Image 1 (cartoon, rainbow, N blue to C red):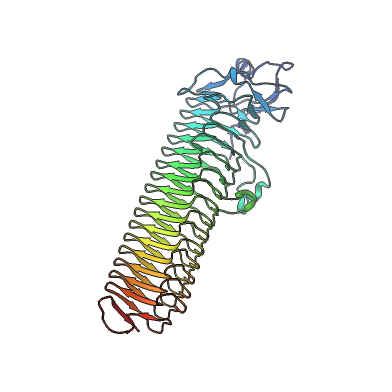
Image 2: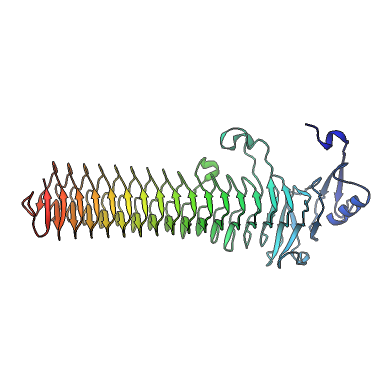
Length: 500
């Protein structure tokens, strides 16, 4: 392939900016370079900010390609004087760097930092079909809004070798951009815009969201650190998508939130980059609402208030994940689905796995030990929990209520304070080959028109009776162990029947 650079020899030139440089400001240097005839076809210019340089200007580019100019600095961090960022350039915002109307900003290779945080003083913004490239290690700390891409615009950080090898190993230990301590969104992509900034450092962000993709936009923040967000670390909504694979959102209020057909890839991976995943979130670790989708396989959300929450027709893939010591580990409600096979919700102060209002949780080979309710399905919902455990439940190990269904073959609910397996109000539990030993109430109980399969089950040592039917229910208990109530089997009583 032949490109323009092979046809035209480009001038390579470095220009110094600062008190003792060739030009005092970035804007003046660009204007005079353009006036001298420098163009994208003939020139490759580096603007070198001299030691002690302070940014006291807003660099505004409109309808012009300046991507052939790269800004670097001698100092590791270059201050931005907030009082000098005074001109409103877009929708009440005052960015330090602004590209508008099909512009390409100069390539940013400098880490800037505001000297004070001021409302609406932003870092870098591109809008109306514009773009900007950032180099690893660059960015703007302590901005109000850090990096914004609006109206079909794009911001990206190129990291050599990131696509080579699995898990980004081709890029070694290179870190991406930094937009730490922003007060009102570190990244925002809106109206079909795109931000591609892997391995970003954007922790301790205040405001409503640290990363915000809205109205059909996309953010790639692969292997980033977005921990300690004041509110939501990663928010995707209104048909937008976020790739946050192997990203750290721990110690935030909400880790991940997909809303109104939003999509998030939140798969956990290499702990070097993923850190604590979504652990210790004050609100929700992972939340999908209103027909949204989140892939959170392997992700730990331990210690969060609510672990995984899917509602209003949403789906979360949380297979091989962990939600230990949460208030509720896994909650699917309002016709939603959570896939949580091989997962752990032990230590929940309320429900470990909770499906209600026509929802489903797939949690085969999972654990919900030492919870108030281990596995709970209510209001026409379903839980698949074969070969799972709900030991030492404060109330019930497995509870199906209000026409719900639980599949729990070869599972354990030993030492529940109340019942091990309870099917109530026209519900069904298949607990074939399961254990419910030493429960405070019944090991297996079916009541109010329900059905329970306890064939080959073991309810020895449980309280009132090992197996009991109540108010017109049925129980299959062939080859089961434990006392029964009614005391006679294979007969129909007013309370129902136990077939043994």
